[in-house]
Every structure is written in C-alpha cells, then in structure tokens.
Length: 316
Image 1: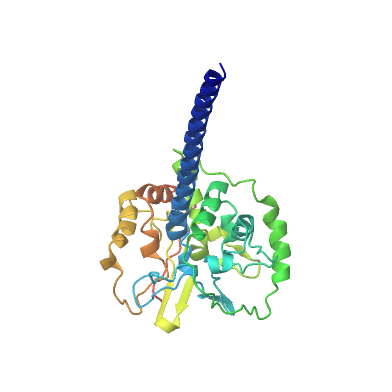
Image 2: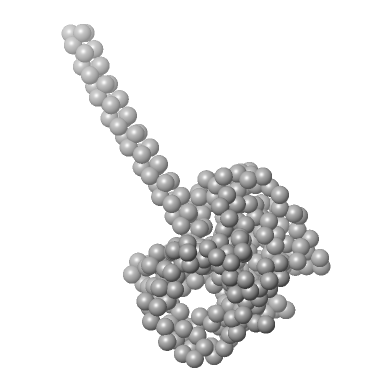
C-alpha cells in the first residue's frame, strides 16, 4: 500500500513539476518576446520618427543631410545652442538612471538631479508620447553600445534654467499623462498628428518666439526657420509643409510626398558632398519610416491651416 501511494505521489509530483516547468518556460518566452518587441519599437522610434541621433549622434555634413556617423549613436556632443551640447544617452550615462527617471527627462525635460534640459530637447512634444512608446525608447537606449562621456559641461551664459523650469512645470508638466494615448488604429489623421509631435517637426518648420518661449501658431509648420553651418559653409531655411498651393505642399499628391522620402532610402541619394546646397533635414534618418507612417503624416498635413510663406531654401 505504501509503495503504491509513494508511486502515485511521485508520478503526480513529476507531472506537476513538468507542467510548472513548461508554464514557467512559456512565461519566460513570453516575457522575452515582449521585451524584444519593446526594444524593436524603441529602435524604430529612436532611429526614425523621433530622429534622436539627429542630435545625440555625430552627423557628417560633408554628405547631404548630415547622415549619422556609424558608431557615434548616443555619443552626444553636438552643439545645440551657445554653450549647450546634446547629452550622451548611452548606458555610460544612463546606466545609473532608473527607467522612471529617463521617462521623466524625455517627457518633461527634468533630469535625474532635478535640473532642466535646454529647450532644444523637444520635451514639449514628447509629453504627448504614449506610455508604451516612451518605455520602448528607454528599453532600446539600454541596448546602445556604451560610449565614454566626453560632452562638455553646458554654460548657459545668462540663461535662467530655474525660471524656465518653473514656467515649464506650470504650463506642461502638470498636464503630463492626460493626453499620453497612442492613436487608435485606422485613424490616419490622429496617427499623423501623433507622428508629427514625435518627430518634433515644429522644431524645424515653425518659427519660434524666443521672448515668449512659444511657437508662432499663425505660421504653424510654415517653414522659414533659418539654419547656419559656417563650419560646413552652408545656410538653409526649412520648407513650408502647409497645404498652401503657392508656397507649400498644396499641389503635392500623396505619392509625391512618399516618393520624396523613399528616394533617400538609397545611399547614393545622400552619399555626396553638396557644398553650400546642403540641408539640416535628416533625410537619411526619416526616410526609414514606414510607408504607412509617412502617408499618415501627409494626411495630417493636409488638414492644417495653409500658410502663404515663400521660402528661399538656400539664402545667400
């Protein structure tokens, strides 16, 4: 009797252990797949839509559109204003930050130490990013190759970071989370609106009122923002993206807009020295967005107010 019970107990225990092992392995695989999916999504956002390496990598402006130099992804150090440089965002620096601290910096501009990031970091736009997307970006940043931090300390030369922090907190941070929702599938306009925010298109295509610290809503995405790169001998104004037929993209068909991006998926389109006819627009980065995302952006741009603003692309 004892042997039968022991045999039965042993068999039952064995079955239980096998089921437990299979369940644990399945959960582990699911977790691995979930993390892998997050990293892949973060990779896509960082290296295309949000074009983070446009600032946090090193760009080669001896080539058209300044493609990122391989191996410098996350290194930082690019000048973002007088005395301000893009931060190193590799694990060398972010390794001792919690995920929550990185999320806060991305969406509010407030760092681990409570300092305020310079407003060239588009946290005004990133505050709209969904929780799924911002945590995916953090997951991906954890996978970057660590690069020693050689970014100079910022010297704001009269800039009032404390005042900015207080202003930003009152205007933006208190509203974080109220609009952080991923657009529903099938709503192309909402998706395009979201992608334009994540791409921080206003940062280059909308005039900024420095005194008030706000974008000029009367010329939203109307272009004409001036960029000067004396070290590479070129000056350029950003394009008018509004549906104005005379000076914007009002006459562009969707396929024309899409083709403009797809052209730069071919290295030959940017692997040359254009001299003074270069551009700040990171075509080699944004070209890698999916066709569906590019089309959604186009469909959103068709809904905004037309701005009649003839832009001289390369001013003398």
